[in-house]
Image: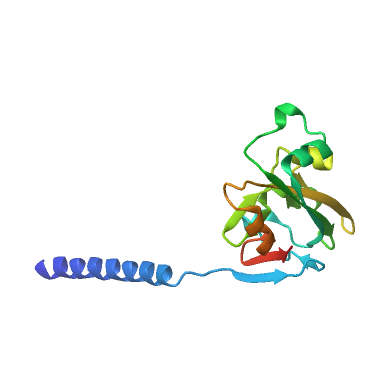
Length: 192
């Protein structure tokens, strides 16, 4: 009887030890995404990479940056006729990134495509998301997610707000701004 209790106790301790060792091993060697940086003039295949979930299904799509433009916020509001009630006073500039999305091989149509709110602008230690509220004025459309037929493309302008409270415009211009087009398993960026 004492022998079976001792055997059970040893078994429980061994299981717990193996479990703790496995947790330590998995967490002591984190896997970081690979980084790939492309030049502005390149068309970059998204491949099996994604932002939040491997279910994003952007495989077959590519991204190409066509142009960039930095505007003072008032100039931006005037150029795109943004109504007064939509204007905010905490942004100083708007960085516009003109992008061509192309569906080269994806045949999934409605079950796949591009989610514009995922795209990021990074510049050294600065990061910002596209301003989804102002997107409709720049593109004359409010669709933030879309899919394309195989063999077609779409030109989109992504507006990124910049506040000098977060980064000086001088540092921003001297930095290396990048458009992030995927995060995992490969972090892909296009140098702007």
